[in-house]
Length: 364
Image 1 (cartoon, rainbow, N blue to C red):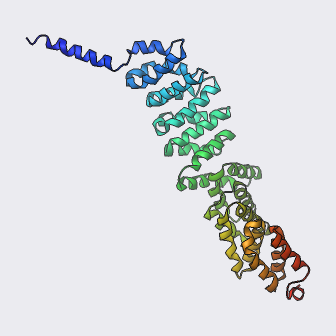
Image 2 (image 1 turned 90 degrees about the vertical axis):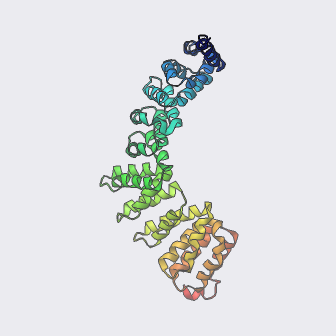
Image 3 (image 1 turned 90 degrees about the horizontal axis):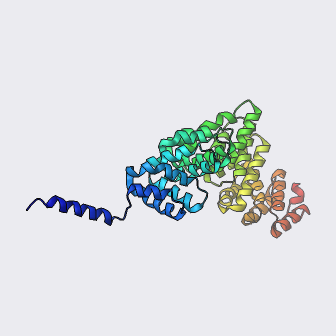
């Protein structure tokens, strides 16, 4: 009576296997090479469910990745991403494909995988040298998605001759922690301090192009004694235009810089930032209460450059015109009113130039 039991168990297993709806692997292999693209897309959708066994069909998926029809190559991309390590290795091999379109999409796909693709970091580092700007930039962005393991490669890419690689590396590093940003500053500052004026200028332009990640580099440069370096740093911060408490504080600190050009640039930079962000005005305006002449002059220049955003300080600026015994401060206050360019500020400046303020004729 017990002999039929194995047969019955086998029948049950076969029934369960059929119930999954998965075709045999050989059938799936044929579907992946079907002339019908819809059949191939459906086959790639279920392929990752086969696990290690399905990895034997990766060559067919790679061929579909090269297909120019979007549903097909998107289906192949999704399958490779879902297959994790085997898929990452397949994508890594595509980074050396003859077709730059394929290489670029392979790099972008690896970026989707993030830390699951750390095994192909060496291939991505090699792709940073790719002559195609899309491949180089997407490779840098993919490295950024892989976290700390890719930081050394990204720091090195910041000095690359490939502009796309530099841009991608800067974007990637910009999303990382302040500690990583400090490493960026440490990596690039020596080139900014170089005795070679060409290298110094090129580095300053590259750091400016980095955007957010370039800010810590320029903030560190402002602490140096080199006048040219500080001037380049102010220019860079102005072009990047990122408003943070650290940036605003550093620029305000330059009101007392030994170089007049740097003092002027810092004030104008704050003025432009203040036109876009009211937090800058709130940080700058209290300087009008200072007894330090340099701070007062810098504050007046910055407020003037802010235009209408600085109009709440109009009464204090007019007070300086009426009460200050320092001709430099009075003249700077008048210039600030003119630069502000509002109806009220221009009217106040005109009254001053006509000597209509009490005591203004005596103080000139």
